[in-house]
Length: 67
Image (cartoon, rainbow, N blue to C red; front, side):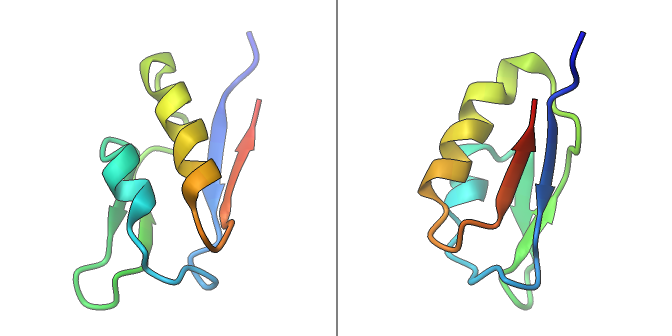
């Protein structure tokens, strides 16, 4: 079974927060700077579609998914 792996480039994050709104189980935001915090590198299957949507709506395009 292939792993669904998520990575983010927090240095390029602009802090829009769309990822945390779309999939709060997988993404959060730093309270001081607003940049993304990846909570789950290998989220369970129930969150895969929400993570895909988060990657689509990210204005900085910093979310990478490996399937």
